[in-house]
Length: 409
Image (cartoon, rainbow, N blue to C red):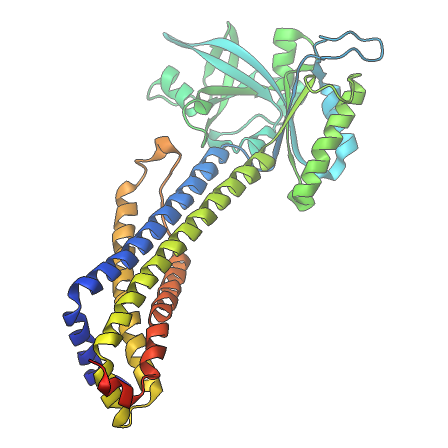
């Protein structure tokens, strides 16, 4: 039940201790401000990692060849490892359903020309499933398909910025583009979350580029995604199996670390998110520690309040006030001061985060923010801190004997 008399007493007590109340409230407000801002910046760090890895599927594995560093089975060290189409078929056979999508990559720098416009771009020749590995967004037309691979057709899917560079405001779909004086038909235009660099690429069927430029089955890189059902431990086992399969195929020593380079985006993503979570936990404990410092400050205020009101509390008890009512009075004042100060700190922190926006992207902080659940937990912590701050002086006030209280100066 709302007791206006009790609230009047609380405000009178605050009025008599303005400076001490302000300093204690300031400590609490500063603590929750630091907690909220640092927690929001921790979320901003996570947002940066999400943005960084959004260019590719997070279950992606890339395999690149290098040079051997050790002699093995009659082969000299320093031998260049060259992947071929049959490596893809071997992986597909050995790994089975653990593979979700699989594609080769062959890179070629070309001079592109359309009418009077020209520019230098990278052709990334791939299989159709590469669209899902790279998260390529088709804006117009289509990506390369299996018929293109089978028939070695001269078709390309160009990036949004390639269209803008060479076709200006025109529509590239269905037009013919020269790449190193070889004519290709534009069958699609794509965009990519990776940004400008990705959107200045050109995709072509891998079989077409192999035929025109090399007349071999050589490939530069293998890209794949694993079936997410196998989990992180399954993905790690899959990376180990890929290493074993390819080393046996190309006669590479087991302990040769420079002949194959395998990068698992999932592992990179998980490690970075673990780092972000650790930093956020550190921030959490710093914030909680600051709040408890505020609790000590509020507790000190309440000790002085109890000291100054000793006689009054003794009279109350003599007139029949219960220990519970005295504890409730002190706790209510403590929680009230803490809650008001805390909410002020939260509001200022939320405003500060909104003003930051994306201004800290150079420091890997993107859109720092706190969600509703964080605010709810912060509120619970505030109530707990306020109750903790007032409990000890409240217990002391409740234990005062009327005779002792009335005899104190």
